[in-house]
Image 1 (cartoon, rainbow, N blue to C red):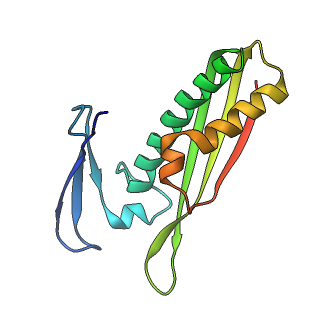
Image 2: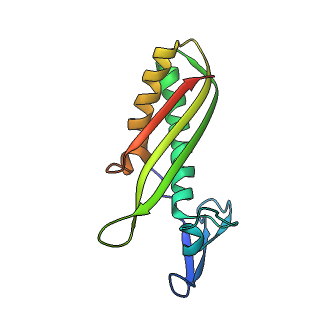
Length: 145
């Protein structure tokens, strides 16, 4: 199985420094990072580890959910997945990811709401990113559109 790589170049202190994250394996992009922007409500054009985790989790969940729907006899016509990853304080010092919320609205044929809910719940626990994030509460809001 493949290994994917990202690289970060950082200059300066935590509060005054800046960095750049490169998606090295794919070459899909380079993104600015900054701790003050990471800890602020407004990202101001920079990304953060939490946003990158949210992106990875939403993509992984969507893939797993599409597989689960098909295995249950349905057809995933459209999946709209949003993932919110929250950063908060960690005692005695520092920060931690305090929670992850997966929200999915879907257009699915061949499954009723109960079948869809079961497929979504299985995707929440079964996608590889969810498995990697054990220890963090992951909630799910799944509904057919």
